[in-house]
Length: 193
Image (cartoon, rainbow, N blue to C red; front, side, top):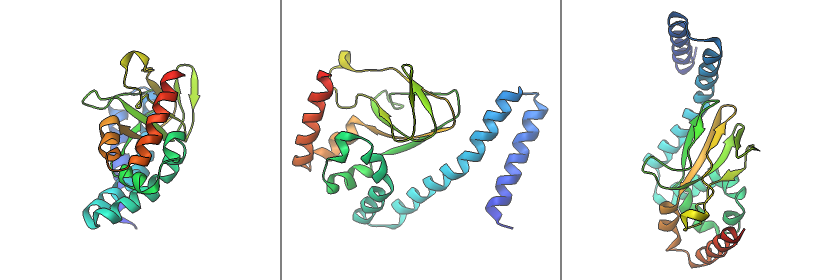
């Protein structure tokens, strides 16, 4: 059979053995198995990103990242109105993360920088609201910390999110004045809501 499938099966068997051997609770075993199975697809998609970045010119990288991320950008009202050249550049600055059920999905990256999260796969909750694929949160555009909604989301099932930090957004904006104007207007609208 397929070597990747065989390796996956062996890893899953080892994981199941370890959880039985350690007498882990049944609900934990279910969450671990679910995460492990779903990670297979996530890792495949991450592998595509690595292949694109290792093999193609910057322009082609942007084009493919944009096409892969187009549905993500279309779900954020202030991004969908921006020009495609800006979005091609921005697509190379997004990150992807996966979370198991019951895990918190932080509003900040490892360095503490505020970020926007777009839920691509799964169901989460935040502030009493249910979030499904295509929904986003994170007051990335609001510069005043006291106006930001910093409530953290929680994964209700396995979740995959696409993230973008303010620094990455700013790096891209300086080259695109039309998109800069649209995003500045969106930030004022968000701050006054």
